[in-house]
Image (cartoon, rainbow, N blue to C red; front, side, top):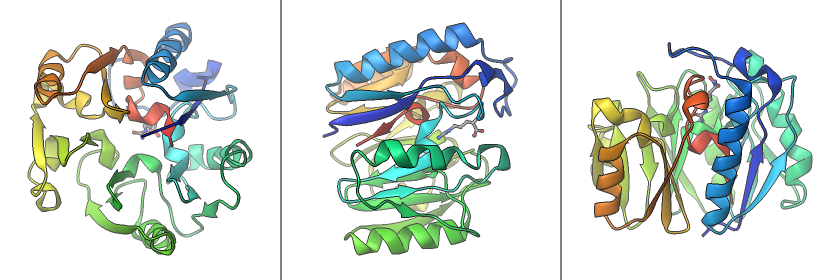
Length: 253
Ligand code: CIR
């Protein structure tokens, strides 16, 4: 169960964020509104949400998930794999100080983004992506081991991050899309497969029994409801324009 969530309010410069897709640039005002609705959805799931102020220095800073990996035993400060985001992680250290005493750090030459880290029980799957390198994985694995966790790497070919196409619900059930559907590592789980047309919605989050998904994906909603989870959908269209989704917008712990 999660007690807390950390979010960062979108900044005015959000339209300068990194985007590899084509549906245009985000509108700041709409993004702000959608972010408020996202926060309300988290609160509905019973977590206390701490909202950090906008950071104009980093257009992508609302995608706060990429800056840290949080567990009940430790906090790991990531090291973004893209130069325009390097430094975002420093801004999370002080706010996290309220919850964690001695955060662990990923250091040069390692790179690691939280979007590449999926926890299932006491195991952490770590995407080796254009943002997270092997050295980042090795450092994270070493840190996690100290706290009794295990980790393994997953090579990515297409997705931005591991959680772009993968989410863990509960009871051994995962949501998979795209390149993750056939991956050896995930065959042992009960898979809920998401088709090509709704693949964006595989990035969703289980929060205290409910699942928050992006709005506009009826087949995904139906599949998750059939599996027995109440679903709450939120409109995140503006964040999608920057390749971000439901998980990227918060750190849950
Ligand atoms: C980026 O390219 O870094 C941002 N525009 C999107 C980050 C999305 N984060 C995530 O999937 N965890």
